[in-house]
Length: 113
Length: 299
Image (cartoon, rainbow over all chains, first blue to last red; front, side):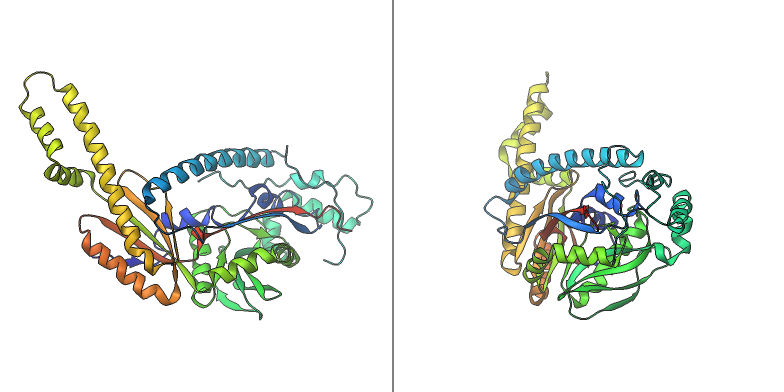
């Protein structure tokens, strides 16, 4: 069977696999608070509090045992992802009922925004 | 996926309004009204529009990409520029987007369109900012990271390659080639008493042989693609038919060579199924995690 290349928007699974947690990722609870919780009251500006960048760019291509390597790396990151997912879910749930979200300490109208 | 993002209930913001003295009555009444029904408000008033961010590119001039944005009424996609880099955005009601089929594909559609002419750093799905100034602050705050990544990703595209096989077909293949396994299978077939242990042993040997074969195929496929890509990433295969789930970063001027190589490999391994996709924005090769906060003191 000849291999055909399909453009990137044809498979929803392939799209989801990429867009949900790859690329530039912003903390989920912040995502909610940016648009949700303080919809009108907060006009304070956002600041970038921390940046964590790592590029997979230089990862060597197909070292001697790619399958082994991927298993070792990916199993761990899978668990880490699951843990992160759980904690994000609980944060989201907390955000939804208004508790536990580190919202804004000070609410002031901004000047010059 | 459902429930990953929850819509915010309206009444919450009202709690924050405990010191009404400072802000005017107008603002207070506006607050009340929109906290009661923020949705309707968002549709009506232009002042409640936020901006959905798709990706970051290098650009010195404002750009426009047409009305292809996310949302029920596709909004104009344009840039918010800051010092030679720009966020690709479109106006949107201030709401949390669920990753539905339409929304996710809209996000990807914009990225793909921009990617035709620019090197992009894709944003993960669902980032909505309240104001243009917030986005400029994002670009300013993470400027070095964006700048660095953009220069490293310049003129490179991502391609996806998944390889699947049919276990049963491969087991038959293995039985043909592996004498031990074949002998064991024949023993089981001809044995009269209990075949339990023989079957257990056969299962173990077959599994190991399959794993071995998969590793060999995958290593060979990676090796064959090595000189036509810049980098590769092996993701965990999904399901038991998949033996390889990889992403490749390919220079634009090597796209044709990579393409030809994948097809050649496909012809070589006619018993395997190849799912070859792209070009994608380099999602698998860029990972920038940002933590944002409100400025502590806006004044």
